[in-house]
Length: 203
Image 1 (spheres, rainbow, N blue to C red):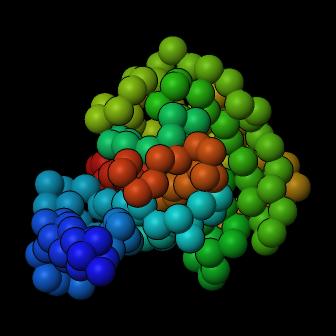
Image 2 (image 1 turned 180 degrees about the vertical axis):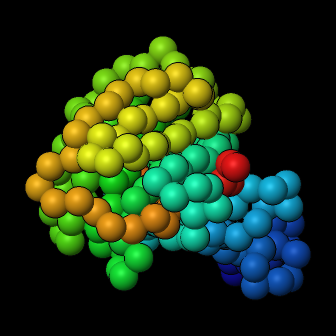
């Protein structure tokens, strides 16, 4: 009997040591989702440590503040998987959010370019390494796309890196967008390290 009472007091003591009496303190970790809001420093922030968002992507669209047929933005990754991409959608249809081009980069210095029409992706540029990309966390990269009739030229940090001629139907929009990919449970370190990426248009 004395043994049982002793165990009870030990358990009670440990509860008050590791719990301050609030329900929040006994939650093993807190989910935090910041969905495309200002970070207070001129950037739009997307951040998550929510395991329910493993292996997904998030995107947001905006009016283009640059000239017609020119899209330019700055982006930087604060934390998250090295190989999960983020970047700029451009030439986004004015009528919907399903037709656009996208340039995706990683903090390792890789990039690719896709054309998305509806649910179909077409690769315009396979993943490749670019010395023009600034690598690592907390560094800014500037992405820019310029259309001249059917030719589209891609710039990274004001250096031309790729050009292609549009085929298979011209996209008709002038809007811009930001996109973030979230890795799976083997790539991300939730909840301790969130995916955190910042964007802002450049004019």
